[in-house]
Amino acid sequence: MVLLVRALIFDVFGTVVDWRSGVAREVESFCGARGLAVDGNAFADAWRAKYQPAMEAIRNGGRGYIALDVLHRENLDATVSEFGLAESIDAAARDDLNRAWEKLPPWPDSVAGLTALKSAYAIAPCSNGSIALMTWLAKYGGLPWDAILGAEVARAYKPQPAVYLASAAALGLAPEEVMMVAAHNGDLAAARATGLKTAFLPRPQEHGPGQTTDLEPGADWDVIASDLIELGRRMTA
Amino acid sequence: MVLLVRALIFDVFGTVVDWRSGVAREVESFCGARGLAVDGNAFADAWRAKYQPAMEAIRNGGRGYIALDVLHRENLDATVSEFGLAESIDAAARDDLNRAWEKLPPWPDSVAGLTALKSAYAIAPCSNGSIALMTWLAKYGGLPWDAILGAEVARAYKPQPAVYLASAAALGLAPEEVMMVAAHNGDLAAARATGLKTAFLPRPQEHGPGQTTDLEPGADWDVIASDLIELGRRMTA
Image 1 (tube, each protein chain N blue to C red):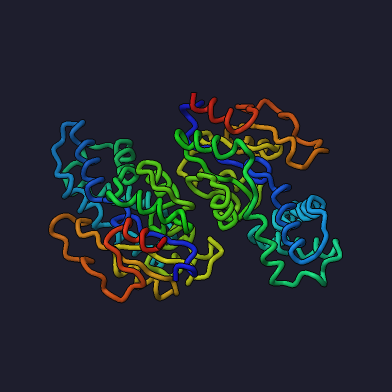
Image 2: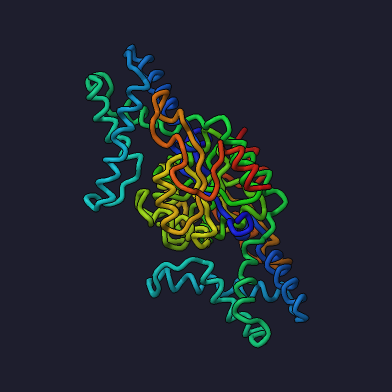
């Protein structure tokens, strides 16, 4: 398998970066500077809760493809209202706050693991984030991607098969030459159904201390690792 | 300008890598291993001479967008025939030889210059090469791109305006926040017409010792540098 696989593509939110802590920190910093008291984690959870429903409207054909940055911005409007902040944060300030998603900390093992994997494979995000979002996020955290693939290249949202297939095709590779890496069993199940190889690693703090999902691999994924450093070690051994 | 520009996008063939020497070397190595004597530079020039006409059929609407890898492969068939090698190189071998375009040496200043620029800007190719070709070429030569933009993102070929505009848009930037870097005056004229900033550097050996084109800047480009190291120094000063 190591000889056959030529590229690894990655879920990013939760698998490579800690979106919850990052968004919470940005929200608290942003609100604090304006004299507003907000529970950053609660705000991050509420904002993120609107993520799947927003994409679902596109997956089911009700809307054409719209980049995630725009969906995040729409969802921010709703979240700001829920938190009673609609009068306190104007549109321009919301545009700034929306960039919280470009400033998410990598998990401690992410940069080292990706750097090791890059020495032997092409590596790229296969995220629902846009090319812009993935590029600026990589600049922020030092993620050493070779290319930016995923939703915008396919103009579709995971777990639709087109996203995995378009990402492999954009590298000139067959599906079985590409391994999808994720901390989410559902993402891997969709990738496997399109013919990709799969690697799971748990991120038990993605949703905070009370997380109940994706604590364990849900199937016999091709590789199961504890983190990206271990994945790097095993895939370059 | 340094404060306004947030990304630099680059022509690649000729500006960042030495396609002629690289293709010539691959052709001579490939043919030599098969006992065939071929002038690698002449073969490279003949192969490259079919590049603009092949893209023109797509620019003028006669064909839909087709990735450059496919055009290179078609042009290789014609070149092989011109050199009397049609009986000597079968289709599978031609598929291998077509990957010569993934193994082109960077100019001596390219990696250092790009690395310096990457510290202050997002950097990406804005080439007529495909995402796959640009990704594997970067792996080969150590080109530290943040993202892969250009023709495939736009599904059009330079100098069509869509390629420059789609590359800026893919980064979430306005045209004036992006600088096009090229050794070709025509590429820069097209980029400037779409609102991008422009930087010229000469590559007087791109076409070999007899080169007569693009030896000098042809307009008052925003920056004129001797090579990518100087561009890096000036843009990060």
